[in-house]
Length: 511
Image (cartoon, rainbow, N blue to C red):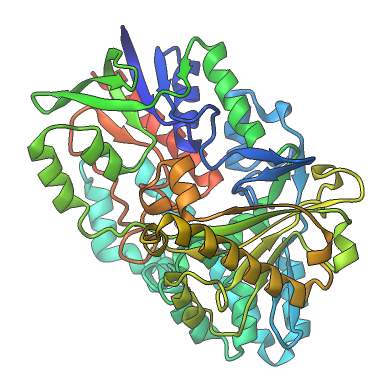
């Protein structure tokens, strides 16, 4: 059997690329190990509760009248109207042990007003900071458009601009494009509490502020405040199922419980795939929705390719995983004092130091990332109940070293620490727990098939992300569309996969 494209993995990137290819009339096969589509974009049930696996806030949606790029993409796919979108008014809430609390509205003007009122001595710094953030975002958009419109390899206009005019045309981008979040926040602010109120998106990328690219923070802040964050009724599984239906309705095929066993390479060119059932398919292009590590070292047999891949990927480190408690409460969120859907609970103001505990098993010092979307959408859980997720970022290797007996003992000991820390903030939460499920890095390894259970792909630090993603393919007719080669997150990967397909279709047109 021959296919135009074979997509490996039905995660966010794989589904988005396969949907767009199918809509463009391409013969597409998707191979997926799990029995449902979505990867991180899934939900699961325990008792009477349905738990969201990963989605916190969906970015780049915009409004019906002023759609953002992700909403426009979902319109192209024909799935916008199949989903009921829930706007989120508060980006996050910061919590410290001394009782300090601060929510950040999902609106620039409101955020400025709230922070200036809370930190009047830093009012001008706050205003200057937001001007810098939105200036950075604006210049980035202009620069990306300039790149897209330029021609040539690499193009005389682009080379000239890079050498002589870049700093003049893009002063904010030039000044802050390669700096860390911590460097920039230290430049603007004295208050560590204020810095925490602005840097929360470091946890969305899994690296601390001292290694978190300011370029990602600035873009996240501007996009969420401009296009607004959204949740959706039914959770991220609804998007995954809608995309899977687009593929099937346009003559694409998704094989569940059947991953790829081998990518067939002849004379340095991908020519087909063998699935786990032993079926062999020929194809023109393979789009990998899984990690480059597994793609090159598990699916490709050629020794020279493995040697080249080892050298190419040597500068990239597998990113962090997570320890998460999925909790169903028999009470509404206000009963235990939960007022914002997304909370960061810090042990102190030094989150760089606290992040070092991510290499340890116990979450006694880590920032606790807690969500409760019953606040934004009461129908998320049965009437009079709440659904909460709470956890910390943890690297996978320490968990991989445990014996079976040690693993289960450690898992529930760690979960108990998280509940104890929640109890300090949300008094009475333990007595209202009706259902609880605990996921560790090994859980993520099992369900996502990601190396070390990584949830953000490679480390998204200054040396490995933004301008330095490992997007180069080492084999002809193989490409990647996932969070291992792009800024991680739901919206970014739906859109990146779409751009990958645009490039593939463009190359077809140039043949």
